[in-house]
Length: 537
Image (tube, rainbow, N blue to C red):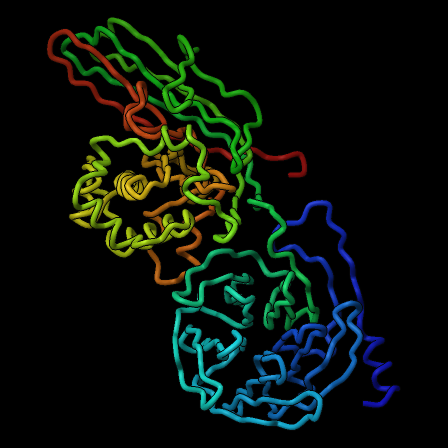
């Protein structure tokens, strides 16, 4: 390349620095201008970035410090896609030729050509021995031989529009150009471990430099340097400000008298996924506020001599900011089971009739799911996968103990939770459940179904949300959205390990009564949501 041309291309490089006081995974550290207008593949050779451009049919060598173009090589074909570096050669997919070419950047000689084993190739990566290739036609990722393109292993793509691909030494990173997401996935089964939004609207090539992830975007024509792990454990997104009135009504249809009636409402508090805007308001005022053995606070209401046909109603009004909350738990950063605090183990490894930890059904399921796994993250994840693969959601009413539910293969969200808790505790991993009132569809909505899921304790990270009843999907990315992620449509009211003195095995609310004579008592619970407008609205 002439010095004049190099200078001209270098002039196109625009460097934008984005200093951040607090970074989270997926945040942009640096932005560079792409050398041309249709960037596709991206790779890193240990010192420089290389990118393939579909319009100019060139491969460009880019200085990651300032975006200067240092060299350019004609692509071996006319529709370049993925690009990767094996330590000596650049491998480039050509979609039109359906070939993968190995180019020596020093000599510009194509030293090897192999058949592309997929019909719609996208990203390309090198794992130190083999190539990996994304096929967005069948939504698969294939590990292939550099000898002749023979497929060695295949795993599902995380979602339906996979594009860019790179390997960080342990995990594959995959971009989705429609969902605008980037996923960290395991190369053995394709489980999604970490995900975050891509910085641009048409994410394509990905590269790993040993510390940062690089992403090139087809629409913005920019190259982004992204944070992967800076110690941030979760991020909040999509704030929603809502008010919910929770109503608990006990109806005595008589003909006898309800002599005593005690009502308990679980009191929500500030959590990672929610912030109360003002104190919770009750009507009528509770007799007292109690704390159960799990630390859950409940408002206690007491009534006496409730006559026939009288309805007893108590309400709780809560106003909160709700957030989509995504957790970043890296398996290799999780501590050991021995690192779990003693008080957590003593509290959340206990057995109960509903769990029946020693039951052969639970014990055998744990052996099948966990095997000899010792990493707490993978214990939790393998049990999660096992429950999803062996159960179906069915709201049939009533609850059964965990072994019965697992044996029959279906259950409600509560029964899924009991099964997951039982298996995790049997494996030595502390777990508890949380319960909530749910926004159903519109922000102004009505909920009388509610929802419960699980939290699992991971040393070095703390409590992580897991919703085993919500993860039943063929897409690994959607499964991951129920492991370490919460939507912004839940107000969590309840946290417990089971068998509360006041809420018993329920959540949100509970009631107890004594009666004289024949009494037909009916209980109704529901939540009514209303969005709260902010000053900007």
